[in-house]
Image 1: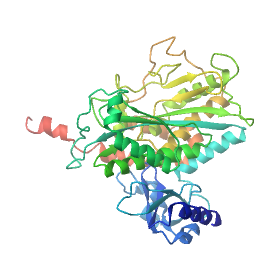
Image 2: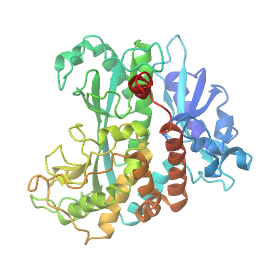
Image 3: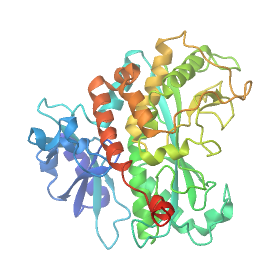
Image 4: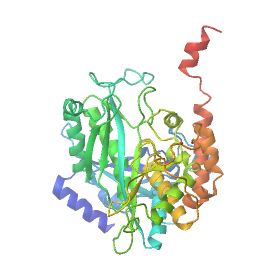
Length: 449
């Protein structure tokens, strides 16, 4: 309690006392849910006096509780107590209109007094603890892609790129110049919120951009930043009369949005264990790659959580869609940008930008750990030597969820209860979303048949 009150007092000294504090709880879909708290009520939050139903962690993408999870009204929808995540108190730079607004990540403690086991953030904490037990610290950097688009009149309308956007704007500096006001606001906001943005580029699609973050040995902070950055971009876009989306595939004819993750490992002396002093890939990084490849299909439901996610897993979709690897090869699911020196690392390129970053990093690190603990896993030749892409990942949502639900490695990485909870929520979404009749079916069939 005293730690947060000290953090809050320091915040008020730097930024002034906020009019309100927005309490943000990350659910299974990486949707931020929570409450607004008056800015003079910090002691209530510090003491756990703010409550939410525990089921808030696990609604479906529509925001509905899923009875089959055993959460929600079926068990009386009991509350948990909210506590702030240390170090996550930040200003909201897009609030505007003379408001002073702060935001803070929160976790819910259950009847045991611990962070609820169904917290996505706790899943990542537990896999990091397994690395720590081996004397290893993951170093992580994320790259996130998003689209800017014009406001829509209706939720049914497709997105329209910003006026004047070229169809292929890849690395186009003039696009950055024309969009400078909003991009500057995004970068400035990221810095104000304590993030560490590196480069920003115009990506291939019209109105598509990518932000790269600096590497950090705090993987939890990397996931926090990925989550908060999505909120920042959407907020800044609204202030500029635009909209932004991290949807995996908002356009049929343009590339989707990905979230790539770069990972290396440090030992207790701060040495990158993926570097063995040679020019080629070390045995340890080869084990890590083998582990990520061996687990990729069974964990695909994490890397591609939603129905729309599977539109990225198509041939010529600009996204890797098979468990393979290569060196400086962006067609590969796992890329090794550097194999020697302090920058030796792997880049995991499968996830869409629509992932829950805590769960995605848990799955990636869990795959690496699987490789380290099973050194005899086979490793196929790199794409650089054998360009055959290998057996494709599924493009079917239900198939991916079924593989995850039956996966022993998913149970080992996430814990069996969370694996089953995740699959249950996804099955509920599949039942609702895949049975809805689409506009294209009405347009094609209704008047002809």
